[in-house]
Every structure is written in structure tokens, then in C-alpha cells.
Image 1: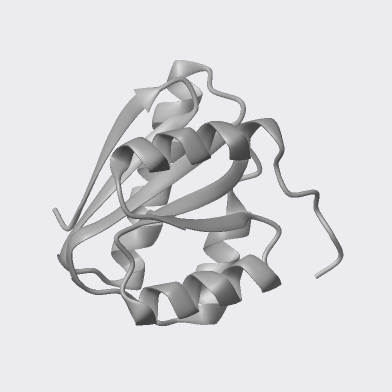
Image 2: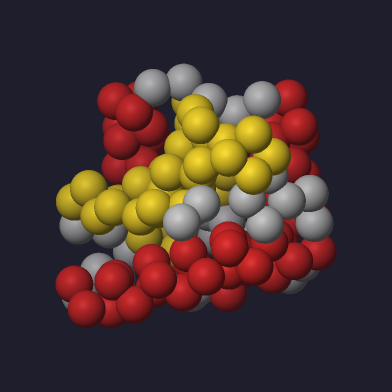
Length: 127
């Protein structure tokens, strides 16, 4: 599977993206994350997207915006090891979605930032 999900702790999930990832695979991973969060009783979520082993991300701004806003409990995303294209995509999504997109280089930084995002999540705006 191109995306493997792990619940690191309450409300913080690690999505490890492998090789080339499609839009449908991202939607499937988000559905899986939502199901796990419901099962675990998590109410405020942050997903760490680990691109260390990813060779291609979907560059579909419209669908990625819809996906990022689909899960009401999601407070934001931390993108780890993002290349230039992934940073541009994340920066666009940070501006046009109701979720926060931040960037880090290590898992330790990502977890610390995920805690910050859960505490002070971006307020919904009319977008």
C-alpha cells in the first residue's frame, strides 16, 4: 500500500507515503484515518505526512482542498521531508483550505508541531 497509517498517540497520526501516490490513495488513507480516529475516540486530529520515501505526490489542488476540509475533526497537517513541489502544494492548501499545513524535516519536530496545531487550530473562514 502506498500510504501506511500509524496512530502515534491520541489525535496524532503518521501517514508514511511510499513511491508514487495517487489522489484516490490519499482519499482512501483519509477514510482509514477517520475510521481509526472514530474507533479510538479522537476528537482533534493532526496528520503527519511523511514524504521521505515518496517519489510523486498528486498535484490536484481542487481535490486535495476538498479532502483536507472533509474531516471536521482534522486540525491540520504536518508535512515532513517535503520537496519543492510538495511545499508549493502545501502552501497553496494552507491558504485556500480551513486547515493548517506546516513543514518539518524530522519526526520529532513533526510531533512537537502536531501538538501545537492541536492546541491552536486554524479557525474556519469563508473560503
